[in-house]
Image (cartoon, rainbow, N blue to C red; front, side):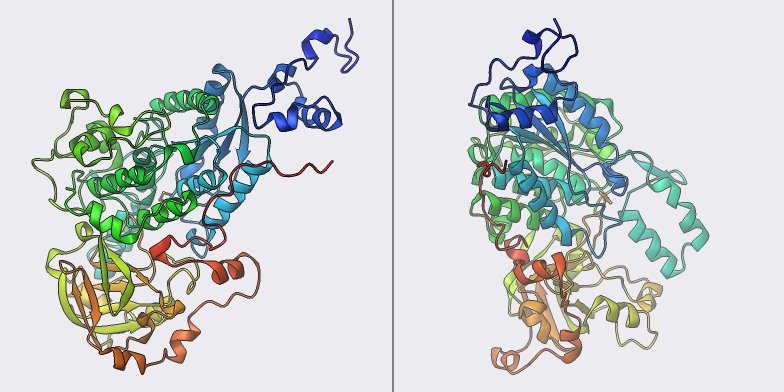
Length: 595
Ligand code: FES
C-alpha cells in the first residue's frame, strides 16, 4: 500500500506517528497531533523514521569543530562516535555546530568571546527540541564556554574533551606546544638561537590533531571537566589521536541517553564539593591560572558560592604531583601513559569531597579505586607519589593589598623561588602598545630587580583580558642572562607560560583599581608567603592621585556591537569575568510557539 503521506510505498504503519509520550522536553515540539507537531516532525524527517519522534531522547552534540580552531578540527570524527553511542542506546543524535574559538587566531583575544560562545550555545540549546547534550570542546575557551552554557540551560550535559596533541620533538628533545614558543623566542631575542633554527622548529611543534600538549589552559580544563564530574570517568587527557578517545566518545553518547532518562542535570550533579575536587585537581596537576576565572564563571552560572579565596584555602597544601611543562619536563601524552588523571587523583583521594557526583550518578571518588593497584602510576617521573611530590604546596596563591584590594593571583609553582618575596622599583607600561614601543629601548631604566607593571589589560580595559601578563623581559636584561622578573598585570597569562607573574589584579585599572595610580619609580612589595601585594604609598597618597591621560587613553571604548555590550556588563576577574546578566541559570523552559 502506498503511503498517503509520502507516496514512498512504505506501509502507513511504519511512518504513522503512533506514540508520543509527553515526558521528554522534545515532545513539546514533536508530540502533538496538530499542525505544529506536524511542522516540527515534517521538517526533521528527511529520511528519518517516524519512531525518531516517539519520545526517544534527542541528544544534541554541541560541536566546536572548526577549521579556524585547529585544536578542535578533529571533533567531527569524535562526534560521529558520540552519534553511534547515542543511537545504540536508543537516542537520536543531532549535530549542533556552535561558536568555536581558536586561541591562536581569534583577535583581540579568545576570552573576549568566551561569554558570547556560552550565551549563544545556551540559547540554541534552550531554543531547540533537545533533551540532553554532549559537549565537544578542546581549545582553551571552548570547554569553559560549553560548561557555562550547560549550567545555565540546565539540561543533562556531558563533556568529551578533545584531547591533547602528541609530543612534538625538535633535534631529539620534546617540544612543548606553546611553552617552547615562549622559550625559543626568548632565546632568539637573547641571541642564543638563530632565527633560521627558530623557524625550523615550527613544523615540529604541532605533531598531530589535538590541543596544546603542555599543562596549559586546554589541558587543564579538559582534566578539570572530569574532576568536576562533567565527563565520563577516565576519558580526560586521552590524546586526540588515540583511538581510545573515540571509544570514550561512543560510551559518552550512550551515557547521555541514560542521563536524560534519569534527569541528571547540572543542578542535580554539581555542588561546592564538585568545585573543591576541581581545585584540588588544579593544584595537583599544576594547572593554568586561567582555570580560576573559568571555574568562578561556571560556579556563577550554577548559583554555587565560590570565591577567589576558596582557591587559596582549598589548594594550599595540595602537592604538585605532575612534572609537566610549562613548569616541568613532560607533556600530556606522557601523563596519559603514566596513568592519567585518575592516578593523580588517587594520590590525593583524601582531599576530595567524597560525595561530589559525576555524570555517572556516582561520586568521583568511587571511580578512583580503593587501593593503589586499582590506579597504578606507570611512570613515577611523570606522576609523583604523595610521599615524593614535585612540590609540597602547589596551590594558586591569592594576594591582597593596596594594589589589589579585590585580589590577584600568582602560581608559585611556575615562579622563581627567589622572587616570591621581592621589593623593587616599578616600571609602568600603560598599554600593550606602550610596552612594545619601549621594552627593548637600550636606554630603558631597568634592572633585574625592577618590577614590570602592565595595566589596561583587564576584562574591560583591553577588552577581554588578554594573555599578556607574562610580559617579555627587556632585551638588554636577557642579554645579561636574566630569565625572570616580577611582573604585575590586570590581564591573564597563557597557561603555557611561566614566570613570577602576578595577574588578574582586581579591580583592574579600567575599573578604578589602584593599579591605574602606580607610577614608574614607586616601590612595590610582593610577599607571596604573606599573601601581600602593596605599593609603598599611604592611602592618602593613593587617594590624591588620578590616572594619567596616557593610562586612560589605553582603555578600550568600543562604540557598538558585542565589544560594547561586553565592556558595559563584564564583571571582574575575581568573580569569573562573566557578563552581569548571564550569571545564574534560566533553566530549560521551552519558549513560546510562534506558528
Ligand atoms: Fe588551542 Fe593551545 S592554541 S589549546
